[in-house]
Each structure stands twice: as C-alpha cells, then as structure tokens.
Length: 143
View (cartoon, rainbow, N blue to C red):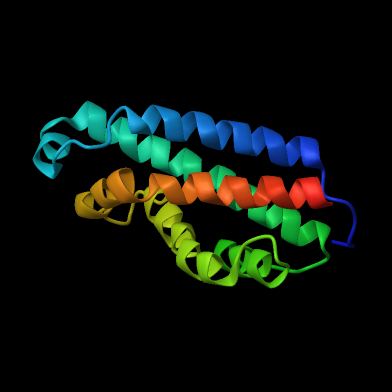
C-alpha cells in the first residue's frame, strides 16, 4: 500500500468499538478464576469481548501502519511499527504486541484457550486497551 493519510473516522470507529467492549468486560472483572470456570456463558462472553478488543486494536494498528507506507506481515509487526512511528511508546508497544498472539488463539478454534490467561487479561489487561486508545487518539490529534 502506498503511504497516505490515516482515515481518522475509521480509526475512531474502531476506538469506539474497543471502548464499548472494554466497558462490557469491566462488568465481569474482579471475579475469581473459579467463578469464570464455572459459568460457560460468562466465559464465552469474556472471550468474545477480549477478541473484539484485540481485533479493534489490531485493525487500528494495521490501518495506521499501512497509512505510513509500512508493510506489516502480521499483527504483532503492526504494533511494533506503531512503536517505531511514535504512535505508541516503545516499551508499551513491546508489551502490547502479545495481544496479537492472544487474538489468534481466540479466533482459531483449533488452539486451546487457557482460561487462566483469559482471567488475567480480564482482570489486569483491560487498562492496556484503554491506554492503547489514548495513545492513538493523541496521535490523531497531532496529525
């Protein structure tokens, strides 16, 4: 893709969807792992919510990377590029890039989802999605 201007409206739609999913997930945060394991409906809702968070964040990353003329062979690379471009702080980009692998596990049913990891992201990872959105919004305002 040749470089161009990022479509702020598209990015903001993804950020809005990301925020909506984070807010829904916050209703489930704070419960013990055993409660999540015992309720398959809640487990499904949490996994789906995390998948939506990850997908929206990664769609933003690929859009911004492509708009900058950067080829990204995978989602983790797109997050890395956001660090290189200054959209995300480098240390945050390095930490956040793991969301790409987690998204792949959630999407591809042949891989086993570790409930402990789902619980960890639910209780300690939602703020990373919010932080991602803040960095991207700041970038859009500067551009």
